[in-house]
Image 1 (cartoon, rainbow, N blue to C red):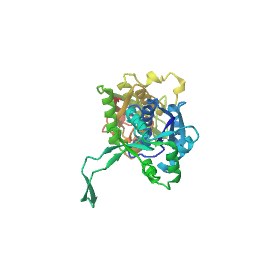
Image 2 (image 1 turned 90 degrees about the horizontal axis):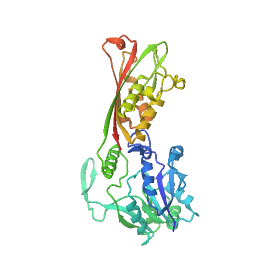
Image 3 (image 1 turned 180 degrees about the horizontal axis):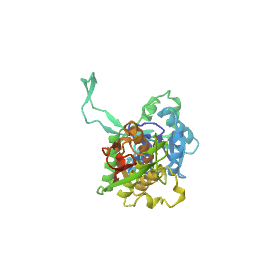
Image 4 (image 1 turned 30 degrees about the vertical axis):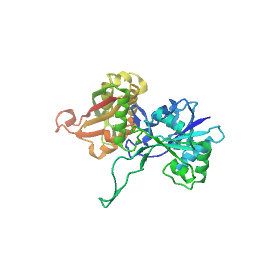
Length: 382
């Protein structure tokens, strides 16, 4: 008997924020999908694992591919993606298959094993939790009716099947389908209910990630390690026609003088992260005496600092940058700056603040001789 797992992760869902599909957002320092993969790899009974990915994400997945794992391109809908994976497994000797949402990273090996065992008693099994809350129907913002909750369940994945029947069911189903149980039942397959797990949540919104982080911390049984770092940087104006600030190129009647691109905001933020890690400053990691960093783009430094935090097991949970200058005006560019920093650091944009102030014409910034920046970064150990 060969058991395969299909992890469906081709969606573009971005309701959770972060500018990335949710399966690629970081959770406890790793992409969500990496946690999901780890759960299935921990079950020795599971053989081949198929990742169903959007073509744009294939390169992103390569660090997590091993001899046990293969990639299949997703389809236009979830059921089309699952069928692609099933077709790819045909003829490989697979007799049973587990189909799971890649955005459910907290699935336990114990539940996976319960589902595999349930297939000894029938062609299909799926985890679910009985509905315990009162249920209403609503219309126009008002309760319109009560709904009996007897016999109602909250469906989860992985959903488990004998391979040949579920492949035939997908081939026959016109689509779309909410899940694979719907496809199986349309083909006349009986689906056994296996008790699910409260922690087996599907990540959809930003609050779901907060809950998942809490669950992972509880599983580790360790106290939360929170660190804060500060950064400060200054660059003088020089002849030029633009400045780089927080990853955004802004037309200006001067430039900023520096060994790199002189992005004062990004430098301050990079130093804030290094400071929280007790890792010195930019000069320690990228010495100005090294000619390879002459004119370098500052996103290299910031990406390195954020990557170092992840490698040390920390998540950058929030950062705040304040730019001190009379000109250029920062307000019109603040949102673009937040978006640029979010992309570089692989963070949610709503966890990044960029703002500006003046020094009321006092000091070197007031005389428009240069720009200064202050930054604070908060790191939490995953």
